[in-house]
Image 1 (cartoon, rainbow, N blue to C red):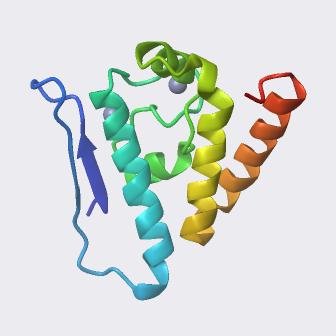
Image 2 (image 1 turned 45 degrees about the horizontal axis):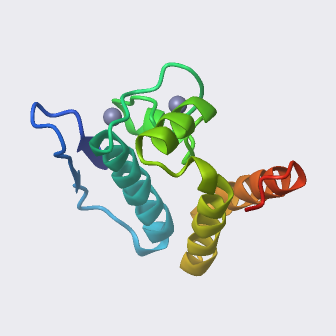
Length: 135
Ligand SMILES: [Zn+2]
Ligand SMILES: [Zn+2]
């Protein structure tokens, strides 16, 4: 049974849905359940905001039909999808601020499933700031 399924590419533009459908959720799995829910919700919201599936890199916007495929994709947009989103929604000059806000939210959640993203985003912020994109 699929634990999590989403569909942001419905015939109705700007509409997305996802559902949590598993009766065997264990309490100790809750960090991973929340992680998967948020990853699916962010993927679907990116569809709503105009992004299509990504064929370029490992990316939050990779398509997936199985839970294993969904788990393999990162919780971050690749450079191409990030650029598309930034241009579509006019935050191209706020990339570093966006990563800082994402990192603050990850830290606030205290969810062990986000450890990899926390490390990756910290490195991205350091790299952006070292290259003069600190604003
Ligand atoms: Zn999708
Ligand atoms: Zn991408």
